[in-house]
Length: 123
Image (cartoon, rainbow, N blue to C red; front, side):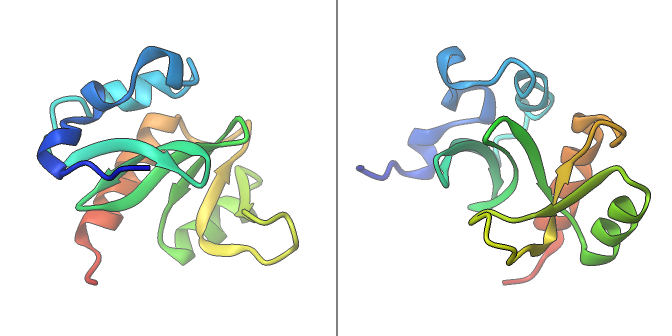
């Protein structure tokens, strides 16, 4: 697959076509439409959002996944609002990634929290 430059990828709202987007994820993408630093793209066979080239939220196998501080993931898992992300489905979870559960905060809220976290991260 040919990589496009950041300028060619454009904003989050422009990069994803309606056929690519889970209808439940579309409002999350729309919430970031005005931010030119955010792009969409396929990641791990899933559509996701990136800031500064780093993933912060995505849909994986029909489930919303967000990158949050480990302590925040621990808190949400402890409250029964989600589970740790296991991308390979082999028990090796990613400690800074949350799969939102039914009782989780709204996806847009989680995505904004994830965006702030990833944007502020060094490296």
